[in-house]
Image (tube, rainbow, N blue to C red):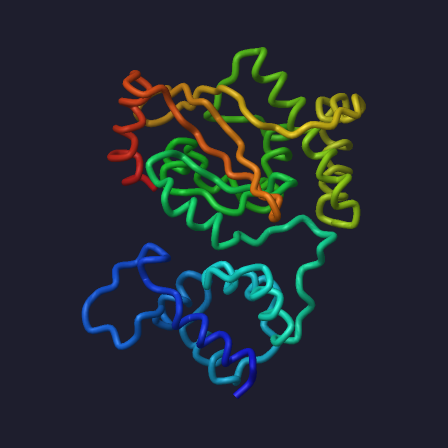
Length: 274
């Protein structure tokens, strides 16, 4: 049996269903994940997971390896080992990190009562919880290049989200400045270089702000979400994750306010739509 098959089975066995939000159920023969559960989390067929664990499937794609690493709650060191024993080069340290670490995943798991999303340093969406999807009503918007918040904001607008003039200007300026800061840290990331190039060519507003050569990180803003249960004014805070350069974006409301009541209602009604 190959080292890849060995570690895949061992790491699957150590992840409990509760860690990934699944019911343990009765009559389980293992404390870890079943093959069908790992397959669902990684977005592949059960048969493919079986063939991987039996050493009959070779050369899995980097995208699949990244999905397996996230599903198995691997550390960066474990993820890199998984890539190497699969015959693939681990993600370069010069590229924008995309791996959701176990610590970040635990934060995601616990903050289920607020809208939350995880973005890369270049503002690509990696994860959103159900309440975020219900609150933003974004549906299938986050596909392809539109999965990048900066591209979406400057080329497609911000449907479903309202800013006052002051916060809209600050938000736009911060996004451009934050992207410039990311480009300085990851100048060899082709995806990021192409994103900046295309934004400058497509959006005069982005080009104007890019020309200011401002360096900053977006931290907080206030906005109004247009939701199925009415408008909800939220504070948007961006939390940086040391060591991984991810951004955890959280929407919160004033306790006891009408906005809080509407968010409570959205937890009940909005998730049915999701």
